[in-house]
Image 1 (tube, helix red, strand yellow):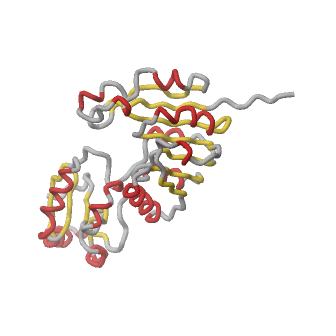
Image 2 (tube, helix red, strand yellow):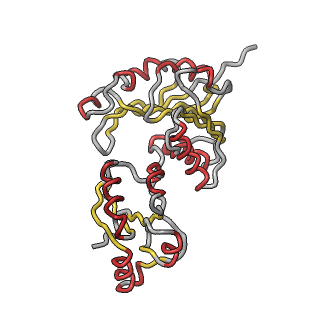
Image 3 (cartoon, rainbow, N blue to C red):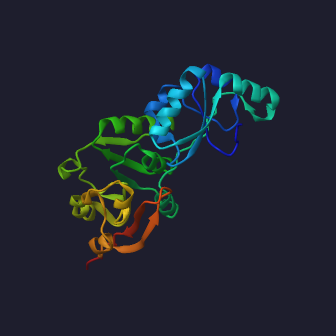
Length: 272
């Protein structure tokens, strides 16, 4: 039975969705869902899916393979019955619930900052990038995987945000923009070769937000490569010349430990 407390992914075509869907549903016409994983909630999560009977099993298998638990499969006929029995849960039109969220650490930090120029290093699917743009930041977002950037651009377009996306091999710092930023973000990504570059390109008084996997994550299977795992106290030592605001270990929903780190570049001293 339909659970109004769990996300509903409606995979039907737009004209059918507009005619009537479960209130609070999110519209992902099949097979577009295959390219829009960055718009789903963080894993693990329980989902309900609505669609034509011919595609429901394939969609459920795809989502399960990506780490989601599909707890309910509803055909168009099932939904029609539900809506006829309880018109109060029926919604018409194109409204679609947003399921994705930015990094909570970033959201918490940005609430206390005036908008300026931001750089998202290793932006992935673009959730943090789009969130920053929505808050008024002028954002440059970088990733080396073109397929990932395509999804990020689509997310920005869906939310009517203008963002400067750059395809860049981050092992080559010369491809990074040679300018200063008021905010530099590195979430679920680690490249120690960029530490010095960050120090040089974070504006005086600017803020650094980092959150990525730390020691102990190996027990969960991924990542295992030490190049992508922070050592205890590493960021505080590396950025000891910054004003450290947050430095703590947190657990993701799946139990993996991440280091959450926020630091402010000290203001330049005036000279006589």
